Image 1 (cartoon, rainbow, N blue to C red):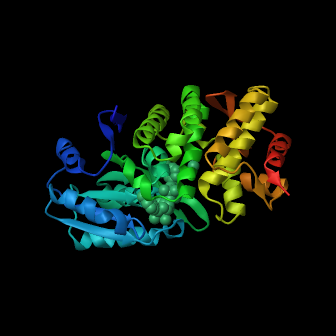
Image 2: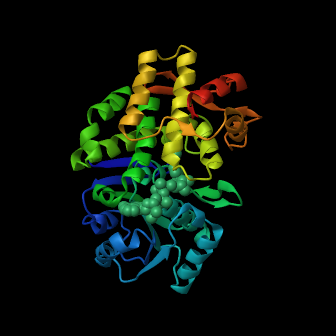
Length: 362
Ligand code: NAD
Ligand code: ZN
């Protein structure tokens, strides 16, 4: 139960390993025959003081050359300028095609390191060591990498799969409660879109999960990774099914933008999930009890189910500038039933508006 193999291309797979410390990292590299390469650990200014030394020591067992780059933390630094900064370090240290990058941090570090790896010398190998819940259950798997550009999120990027994803569940011990809950927004989404039993499990195991019980967390992260893996393997470049992972994200991104990123991503996704569930209820796809149980689960994990200071018209307008549109039609993810989502292109503005009203507070 503590290793998953994810398809990288027609020929190769990469493992996701679930561990309680960093002590198996060098062994994993040997198993993959990635030892004796130059290593560059990319991390950020919050993560470096906590985990960089331990990871460096571990890599010293299998490599003579280890450099590190500490990026300034935060989404506002997810820029091409920081990618250039990474290239410069790599050139200075004579990194070539067989050398390795390590993303040690949350989704921001993961997306940037992955993009640098995808483009440096037309592509070198990289390893994901995700340290936020969101990165462990979502961004480290599936190969989407990139940076923000102008005012657009993830505007420039590439698909580039890692060689290994190494999860150390105990890195979550140092995460703030708020960031932990944000990851739970994506976790609950996984249950709702693909696995009702998992959704029920999340409700039953709330205490353990919120107390960071290592076995409960490992089981949870594993189950979420299975769902993400299955969806992205069926549709690696998002031509269809992969879009179900965007449940709650159309309204979520709109709220995120209108609130100038003062509400966190997972909190906005939670609000968007309420809209998606409400539309599913209105269309008779789920029952009132099921709708209430979805809201209850979000609340139980300290996620908001409403937002202050916005109006429906501005949210509706903002949803239209989301990238996930096809010929002016919004692809909206609805629940066909509890535990199974589908992509619907028939949601009207009136329906959207009504669903948005549900999450507005005075
Ligand atoms: P993040 O990387 O900014 O991390 C959040 C904060 O937590 C940062 O300040 C970071 O320094 C700090 N941090 C990280 N690990 C820590 C730890 N163990 N202890 C204490 N502090 C820690 O944000 P995130 O929420 O992890 O990821 C969000 C990013 O992921 C966004 O840029 C989003 O676009 C991207 N994303 C990508 C994908 C994908 O498929 N590639 C999917 C979802 C999200
Ligand atoms: Zn998300």
